[in-house]
Amino acid sequence: MREIEKKWLEIGYKCFAHEGPKGLKIERLSKEVGKNKSSFYHLFADLEVFTESLLEFHLSRAKNISTKESNAKNEEELISIIIEHKTDLLFNRQLRIHRNHPLFKEYLDRIMQFSVQGLLPVWKNIISLSENSALAQMVLHLSLENFYLQITDETLNESWLKSYFADIRQMVFLFKGQLDGNV
Image (cartoon, rainbow, N blue to C red; front, side, top):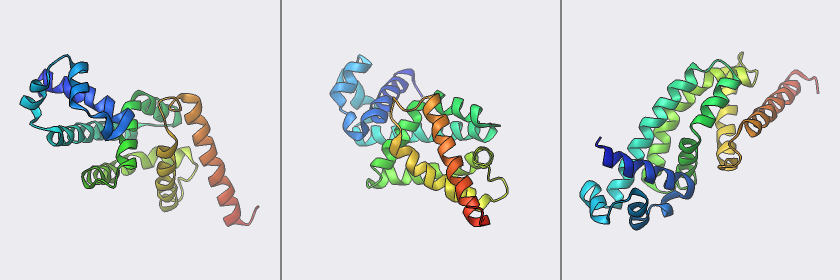
């Protein structure tokens, strides 16, 4: 990828992450890149092609993040990865919000296929469900949906994430107690 294409994509990526598809205005992107609109059209032809390029850019980044998550040993490492990739998670949030758009749904589904599997090993440890992979995966799916509903640029920080994980652990603890007849 040429450096100018990368610059357009990086700026478009941030705009999409924070505002969704409505943040992708060619004139605005042109100003932020410091190039005229003809440069955009020369590289991407139209906004649809640019959006597809953004989605491919995100897919590549999501694979990278999934690899990092699969190597995380504990909650602290996972939190560090999440904070490091805040913009990527906000981009993914926008895909979820706008999943009625077929292309956004397609990419979200593709990302979920590998990201859940990468996240599951550390997730099972974080929520104390190492003994039950099926239940851990179900809790992960539900938690991800809830997570993406709640995250913002302001909430994605260490204290919020620790609290979020503690709440999930508490829920699992109470649920396990109900199953064991202890509550």
